[in-house]
Structures are given as structure tokens and as C-alpha cells.
Amino acid sequence: MLFDDTYRTIAQPAEGIFRDRGSKFLGFAFPVKSTEEIAAHLEQLRKDHHSARHHCYAWRLGADHAAWRVNDDGEPSGTAGKPIYGQIQSSDLTNVVIIVVRYFGGTLLGVGGLINAYRAATHEAIANARIIEKHITEIYRVEFPYDAMNTVMKILKDKDLPQTNQDFQLECKLDYSVRKSEADAVKEQLEKVSGVKLVWLRTE
Image (cartoon, rainbow, N blue to C red; front, side, top):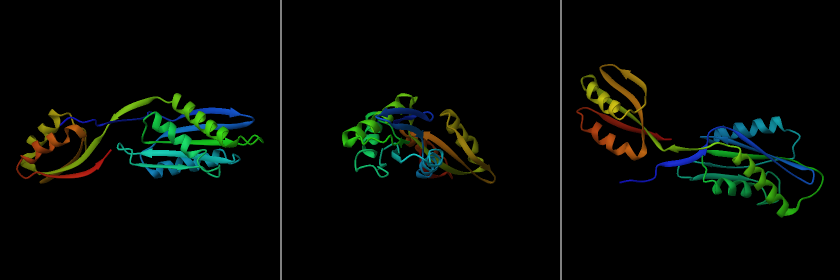
């Protein structure tokens, strides 16, 4: 069965800026894979811009877009995190966090002004980013007897699958990564080999 096993993200950090009536909105976009990475970027920006009034953000994780969050960081509800997230959705991105740092310029912008400003700063950051398409990858551990090594290695080599954590003893094991759309076919081949045991580890 054919299905879409790709997703869009950004290749490296990018920045954007928007100004309105003295207030300055700095947009920072980062590629991320975990909430720990998101927290680290947020902490660093709070240190780098400790005199800024707000550090608002939105993020989305996972090839299935299942995990996401928005935060207004003291701005009126719905005026910061949601507009940032809306731009992430519009660009169909995932595994990304966008943080907008606001330096207050002394003039209140109102709800509409804030929504526009956070959206514009985010738009600029995304516009300055290099958007890439990635494949959803499944990581498996294969365990096999030593005398099955040639057969197992040929299957992996024929598919040109990256391998890590190789351990070739009397009982051998290694981890391999495979594009999700090809995972079942490879699994079927390996399971035909006598003594092979497969363990799914994670999706990336």
C-alpha cells in the first residue's frame, strides 16, 4: 500500500523581525525533536533577551502533527501563541518551535495589533528559513545467530539501510533505520531468516 511518509520542517535556525509603534518583535525558529530541546531554546532566549517583556511561542512535534502547544506569556489570551501556531500550520511544518520575543515600545497595540505583530514576526522567521522535506523513519533492532549474519547483512545492504550499535558475538544484534513505507517489506524478509528476532524501537 502506498502512503505519504514525508513531513516538512526547517533545516536550521532562522530569525525574523517586525516593528510596530515602538514595539519590536523578534521571531526565532528552531528545528526540534523533543520538548527538552524546546525548553532549552526557550531558556536560552530568556537569558539572551532578559529585558524583553514577553517570550511567546508555539511548537509542533511529530510526523503526525499530534503534539503541539501555544503560550501567550502574559499577552492577552489568543493574541500571541495562536497567531504563531497559525503560521506553523499554514507552512505545514512540524518538529519546529517558534519563539517571538517582544520589546515593549510604550504604546498599546490592541488585540488586532498584537495578533498581526506576532503573526508577522513568525512569518518573517519562516520566510528566512530553509524548509526541507523529510521521510518518516522506523528504527528496529534485529537479533540473529552468527550463522545468519551473511543473509541478514545482505538484506540490509541491498536496501542500503543505515545501521548502528552493531554487536557481532555468538548472538548478534544491530539497529537499522528504514523509511516507513518500506519497513514492512524489510521486516517480512528478515522474519523469514531462521533465528531472527525483530524489535521496533521508535519512529523518527
